[in-house]
Image (cartoon, rainbow, N blue to C red; front, side, top):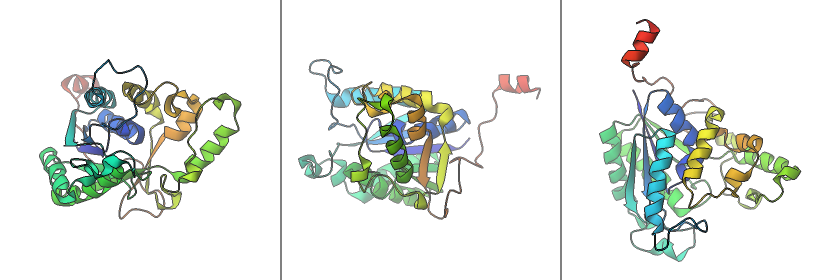
Length: 279
């Protein structure tokens, strides 16, 4: 059995960018560990979800554990930093935020977990954090350094296929069934995702789209039924989220990998499986 550690900035990031590879790895018999840098204190709350006086961070921690279980995570850990908010938010400069964390110290925290888990594979984000969020950029910096300290052999930078998404959004805009769905305008966001030319891994996770959506629904404070993620037609959701994209140093050019855990040992079958297989 190999171990996948997937490192994210906030609760709900995991199901959007890596939910399929998490569930795939778990189903293959690998150990999956979810690590989140912050508790998502700056998230915008869906109206009517929180109880009066309930702190957002507490609910988001609970949501993360629920989503992690759906996605096959056997362990969920938080590094203990505070959500920094979007780039330019006054919260960016507050002590204790992930954006203000010393990269070396934060990397040592994560490296200790990677060593404890004997991690074979680590996922982080690309250099601009997918869309320029400070905490996502910090995941990239901290994650790469932690992998160096721990000697983790495989590191994948999760991202989006910018060209693929632009094509899909244009197609969606031409269909009447998308009326009323607020589609993101990534054409005005040059930092969104990465161009196809730099991607090296594409993992087909269409078999787990229901699982991804269930994990998204577990994050009810952030992802409503009217959101882009849940309101789009099934075919459009499959196009947008049926492939998870990564960059791995030393791979490429072009897509050279379709399974992050390829070639790694899986858990031996349980006793009842051995009997069924006639072994």
